[in-house]
Image (cartoon, rainbow, N blue to C red; front, side, top):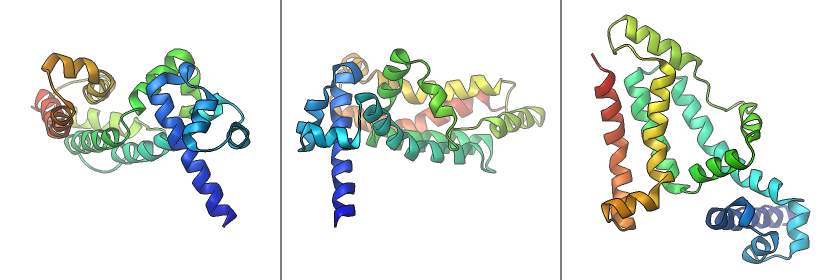
Amino acid sequence: MNKIKDDTTESQILEAAKSIFQSKGMDGARMQEIADKAGINKAMLHYYYRSKQMLFEAVFNNAFSLLAPQLNAILNDDSSIEEKIKNFTSNYISFIIKHPYLPNFVIQELNRNPEFIIKLKVSKDFPNLDKFKKQVEEEIKTGVIKPIKAEQLFINIMALNIFPFVAKPLIKAFINAEDATYNQLMENRKTEVSNFIINSIKN
């Protein structure tokens, strides 16, 4: 029972921290507020996480550890570049719809602590582009796709997928959309983005 209780308490802490970090950012979040939201006292929170930075990294790593292996698997499977673009886009958008705080988390932390990415890169599941680069070169040589640097293609994929989530309030204001309309647009982007990119590179 103790093990189950410990896991439940830690899960409550991470959910509470995720909510507070999402609304107030790293600098604006307070450990007491996170403890209150998790329904525990501050001493118990510090027992699990000695500092706000450790808690922030735990929340981020918890989400990143779910997303990164999916994306890495897509980049390194045997599917074509076209299929990779479709699968990457679909998986990424599905995941971010469920974890909308993640893109802003990354940007906030990289602006606040640029060395944060070094910790991420050592993860075994951090996306590796080597196979993707070779495939792009091969498909250019065989005439499947137009000449393009693999790095530029990957940036295009990331930018078109990430920006709508980072700029959600701005986009909703521009198009005068409520949450339901915005969410449907994001669902539609699973095909819109992949088709846009594929059509731009296909011969």
